[in-house]
Length: 94
Ligand SMILES: O=C(O)CC1=CCC(=O)O1
Image (cartoon, rainbow, N blue to C red):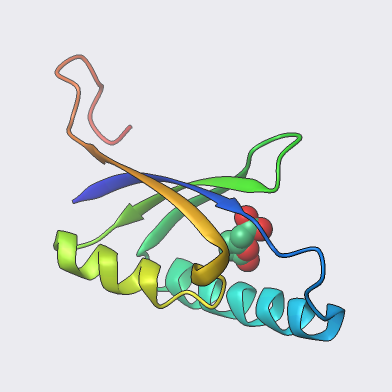
């Protein structure tokens, strides 16, 4: 199951810089792990925003929820999820 996920990051301005760097470092490591597993299929920066647009490939809504809610930055994310279905005019493997 494919999902389009938009994440906006809102780190508090008074967050200790060391804590912010640790969160970003752990988020990056987790993102790499999920990309290598084929679960986090695309990760794009939204130009001009501290936000990303991602495509996740998971087995269930529950798996997606577990992944998103387990992200180190989760407490600071606004997340919008859109389920994706194949478009009838899409060429195979696009
Ligand atoms: O910077 C972001 O958009 C949040 C994020 C997702 C994966 C990562 O490494 O940072």
